[in-house]
Image 1: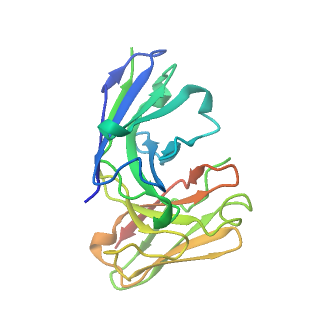
Image 2: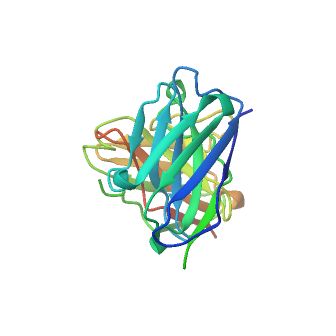
Length: 121
Length: 110
């Protein structure tokens, strides 16, 4: 059974850097074809895709946020870390991580429960 | 890359069928058979319902089906049930090697 869980601060101040960790089980990020992505959702609004890292360290970013995002993996700890710099109140959202497997279709499944991050001074 | 366009809301009575559209461009929906659909109940994480336009993951009811024509993909739910009431999001892989989501559609079961 694949599970993912997001962790990190619930409150950050404007201009600070956000660091979120996705800890997963049931799969390995050293297995060919496997990836972990990040998606966020502001309160009451739509989903927004952020970034993805593959088993081979290939990384993809949303063009609109690329300058602010960094995604890394720690295969030995079964973790993926997303950092977002220069946080702003508009970045207030629930941040989700999700599993991706190339052989399983071009989709994300399953997702973690999400973690709400509020940006406020 | 702009978000995909979905109707803000749709509704239907129990037992009826509804269809949710998702319109993109030739750089995303129209260019690949890589459209997926997610169901999200209030306060919950999204759940994959359809992938690669028309494929259902194991465990998803066959009342859910997907299709695509040109730059528009569609999700059809037949035999509507009260538990289908949720938000639905489409997503597509893009020619620039990232993913884009739709604005979401709120389904109300009357």
